[in-house]
Image 1 (cartoon, rainbow, N blue to C red):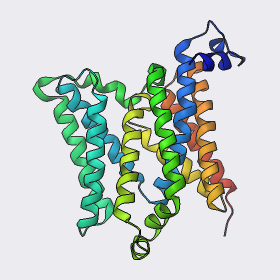
Image 2: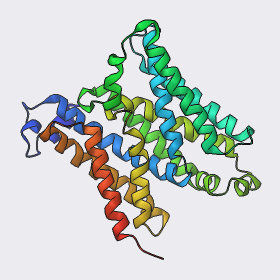
Image 3: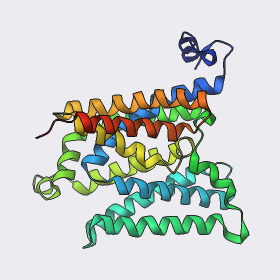
Image 4: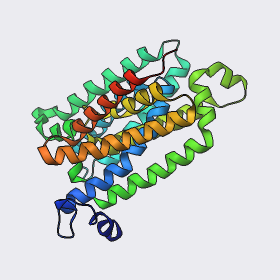
Length: 281
């Protein structure tokens, strides 16, 4: 971290100076790590038509956090991650075995997760207010250790993306064709779902449950409007998410607004501009 603090001190901002705000320096680094991660996952979420699924994962992560708190865990995040991963894997199994559309299965899982989370959070007359921070998020509270964990996840997702991109794309576009070519569609969907679950859960307390799904959808949706090939598609999604993240954290710091919401508004602006500039036909 000392190297990062030395590098960021070169920026022309008051908080970036050697005696500046350490929490802002940590938050800025977290944004540089987490937004490319969301940009990368967003291309897969949009291509595989899993936007509602990622929203359901956010609800499951909240339920896991409530379970961890109820169990008296000093750090409820591991409980939330475990619950979200189990939720994602169970969803994948049910979707493959049930003769129902994906949106129906997602609706069942999402509504159940929300109800269970609220039930546990308010069990015994407990106040729900202690969970309010999860709804809005606070990236300024991120610690160096958590940033390091996000960086490890970014590397793992990038490696998985490089090794299995074509198989994931074919699985999302034409599952039957992928299966006929010997691709283990269930395995790839399970790994991808688990990856989203981990990222959503770990990022929830910094980005905010209310807007985290937007960060998994908007970068890829905007990039699709501008790109003419898969390379551009992924590049525009990652760069768009990164640019919105930097602009969002800077703006939120200056005006005192939620960082997650501000970043999402910049991503929405990116989508609007990409829609206006899209290549027709």
